Length: 193
Ligand SMILES: [Zn+2]
View (tube, rainbow, N blue to C red):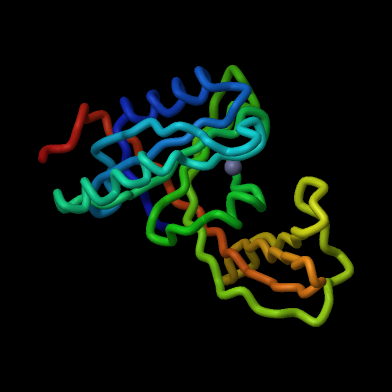
């Protein structure tokens, strides 16, 4: 299992951000090197419905180029789930454009005990389909996006199959694999530069 090392301070900061933003989802970035985060930026959630989704404001995403110049990378993207578990939703999988970043999800479903979990999400190519499988379910009552979820099975990672239906009724399927990433807490205040 891949690992992400974050400081206790950043861990606590993500929880504090999630709690301050509830009932909306909040989001932000962790920059660092080789799976170790050493800087955190809170972002603004500009999703149309921030209670159900997150979309990072573009100005924060552009910070990538600043820290890449300093030899750092975007090691993680975090967001909160005010009411649902610490597991990627179908729409999280749909928008997981950064296969090298860890997606950290902070769940406040149990208000007394926030839970944080990390994932990598790897998107496959969208493939045209002749029809929809019988057991797909709509994503949040949408008619243009349906999904099927399969839990991890042996060597096969957990995955969403996302079926998008175009205006002219064509169907594309995209598989997004989900792998758990272990979050390791460090007591160091910050990494040595
Ligand atoms: Zn989510």
